[in-house]
Image (cartoon, rainbow over all chains, first blue to last red):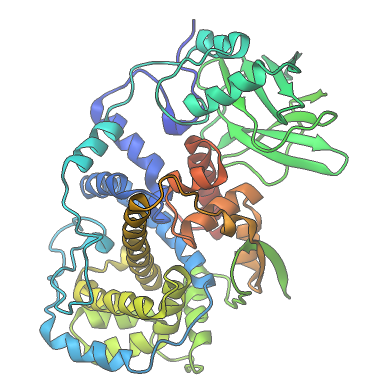
Length: 290
Length: 220
């Protein structure tokens, strides 16, 4: 039994290191979604609290905010009502400005409480939700990882017996994916084949034409540098379609492929820059025909 | 040169801008206004003056940025009256918090878009929460139609760099990023909408944003 298997940096089921480190890492994984405002209230509160403590996390959040702003700039401009400016200017008198941050910025400017705004229509209610039990719950959830670890055995059990070994944690290797993997492996028409991988290791593809899904278990693949990732591809005559990325931190992992499987396609794996590529940029290290 | 890019539901948008990120955003804003002279102060300069309590600068900043900010808010908050309220909130917050704006952390426009996006998303989630409460009283488990997912309209992006940056994302990454940014969905909601595991959505969002950031040359 080797160590942790979860290839998704988001849910590394690794034995938890120092609590501080674990929480910071967990927050870093939320930074992109934070910039898109795709976190729910609890997660956002936890992230903002963590960002106040960590200049590193703030820098990460800022870099994503710049990228998200480009999306904002793509929205079609619309002239606001002509009287809005006058109404705004008229309200400045009653609105004291904040003091400049004396030392290092305390947090994201965007999280600053604006409840001082006098205008009744400017309800800040959604922002100023009290931090109650929900937030405490979020902190428990985000700062403490489930102790269970999915190892080779768990993945194998999922594959072979279709048994769900849950950690109650969603992710590419979480219960949702395990259910999918189990469904593929236990499909009446499931097919499985193992191939050697150039550079070391092997990969087993399990597919179900009926369910139009497939999954892989890899073992012995070398760990990549932080700026690289393994990327899965569905390959056919019309080209390559990305089926998701994975990273190996031990010597084996498994992954349900994104997209639809159809008999006759080949599944390939390449090494790509972190984040994956829209099209392969390197030679495949393995191609599995079906 | 017009590139056609499948990106999200909504109107076709043309964006013109230059190579550098800050220039790009600046020109986008200039282009939406009445053709400000080249010597006009940049939003960053204006925001710095706003931070010192300069009302004229605030008025000027409003003039050059309001169509952009209102356009973004309208994209998320469909109701015009609510969108106007949100936009008003955004500018009042800009006035109040401008003294704390730190140019070392990013551009003025990115900061303003961040404020606007967050407020708009908060507004639609508050409305959604009220809507959900009503639904629970009426019919349970009413499915929300997945209409926006099906809709894909071409967004014409003139600016090569934005085009290239977005083209660097896979279709699945773009879909997730668009559902988050333009439809204001949480990761969880996207997972439900697309019927994929939450972790898959997280991975797509993160990978997509990493690629976008790297393609735009934003340094960490």
